[in-house]
Image (cartoon, rainbow, N blue to C red; front, side, top):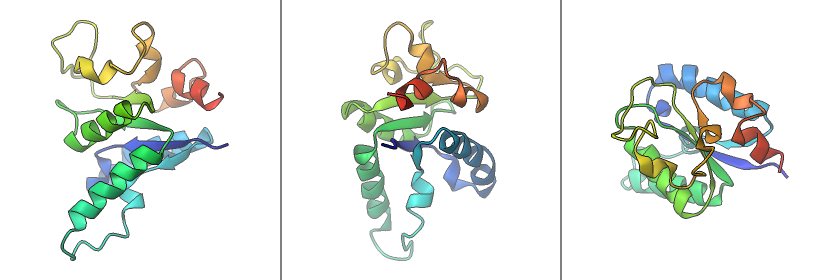
Length: 153
């Protein structure tokens, strides 16, 4: 059975980032055989001229996180995008598989143990959380990382 992976990201707000990093990440995930649920493409049918469009998008995204098998969250920025953080929190609360992507070299933490707010690592193993952390698109297909191993289960 094909696993569904919610691709939490802030890239859909920009045509340039949509065509660049978002497209690259989505392609790398799809090459692994996963069904990628990318919120900007899944919600493109929303009529932005109608009242309540924002609530409709929020509900659709929340439902997609709930109905997915896991989340691949782009956590670039200091701090990372607020929407991505909410989606990640929902996925963690619903005990979804969590994979974090950050190719941003800046550190955003007071902790020496983690490169971001320690709460983002709460659903990952205490030892070996690094296997769930991706710092390049090339790493997505690494068989020694958690995503490929999760997909093979």
